[in-house]
Length: 446
View 1 (spheres, one colour):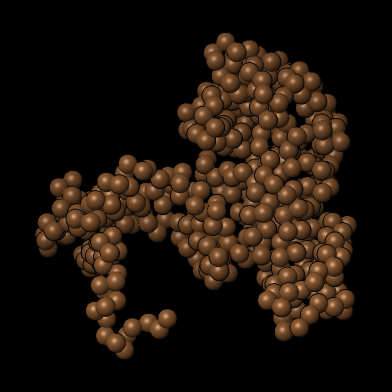
View 2: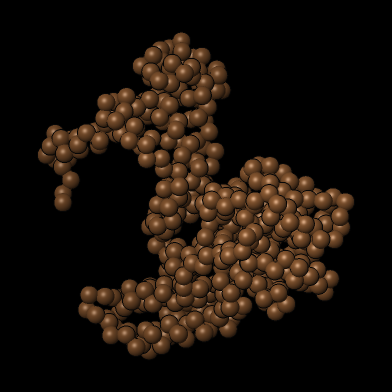
């Protein structure tokens, strides 16, 4: 996501490196390259031109402090303008009625049905709401079954009527079901088409008129670039939707839709889909996205993801065990599973400033941790709680159980022992002691 744009912008800013001050000539040269980078990222031409004109005006109006280099100032201005281009601030859902209704709209293939499930899980786990999924796509044969499977997976109720072909009636009946059973949110999954047509628009408009939704969300595939923006404009002209959800933003997308759609339709991007897992739905934060586009990482989002899986009671217990050197394989397995809950490992690493570019071409297998889990799960409960019990015969049995070699088991245990020692040292204030004991030649220079 945005990798090519990030590289191009970085090259553009190098034009100003070494310059003592900002002039109309070097700013024009830099922004010409920036505009070209935006257009290559499939950003709408008018949006790209307006953006660079604004940046130029602000850059030439700045008095550069001696402590700030021209290239640093340009990065700051571009960052702020990128954030404004994408909406400035995150926009929350406005769910005021009981039950609240969220209407999902978009073309086939954009990921509406999957997104409906993701949104239901988001509302259930993060907003503590009681959602009901309404299966109103009566055209695509597998749509209702797909939504039913997703609902079962995330343990959210679904309303469907296989004998009814009128999506308006199904949606109205779903709302009555919600009222009767105490669900506070109804998510209406509607039919899409391969292209915008009058029948699709009439149907979605009729559903909106009948349900009076709190939120109408337009779901769009970010990989379709400017086509996504054009489709969004057509839908908005007819539906006047409340917000946009960009799906497949983790795919091979140049990012043009994310950077153009807010300006073209004047509606906020509310969510982004960043993966296939059902919890891979994030609130869209324009400033954080600007950070990532400019290679600054996204530490705030990384911390938020960590907090979602953080258990304060478990953390205190673990801290005590580490201090007593009682950290065992059960604890190690628990930590691995918490990391996996946070999402795609490469995406998480890219949130750390400077790391994204370094690992751009590195293939990080998301299943790399599965082998470690298999080793631990092949141990008996007693072995997991007492690592010192692992002798040669036990290691051979574990190796057979997880499909590894004894050498791989030994290597894992060695790494585990090193991790345990390091954690003990850090938790017990042993870092200073370690520094004092280091040979003088090895002492790092401050």
